[in-house]
Image (cartoon, rainbow, N blue to C red):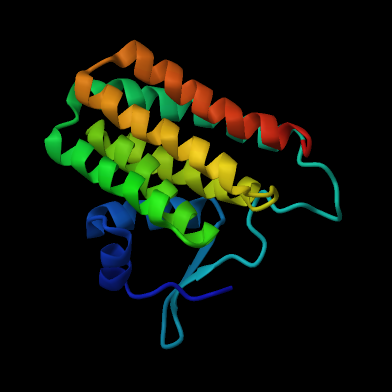
Length: 196
């Protein structure tokens, strides 16, 4: 697979701290999405066959549903804590990522900002374990999302939900924020349901 850039460069590109990046990379290596090797030709590489890759056209089945269930638990839990703990800097970063998604010309750019948005919610929750869990979830979701089409109207709707979520975080409206996050996740579940 492709080699990842150097740690400092990658952290700058993603707009995250090096410690958050290290946690994310460790989680992605442990989950089988990345391969890390030492030595002269060492580095961190994208796995040739990530864990959720389809095998011989078989439906994804139980493992995909397990990922989606795990996502619900992690995302809604992170949202509750982010409502309680997020500061202006956190919500400002989230709003900036919403703008990045709105301005994205390519799906890859949108998805990169989307991943950063969801990990930033976990960072706003001030829980390193949730950051690791969210990173794992986003890695697994990337495998699933790669299997579905990405029409512009779906991305626009999804990003409108992101924008509303930032507003709810700023207002401290936990119930409404969790309900919106669940609705946001359900949209992806409905699209994937035809494949699972």
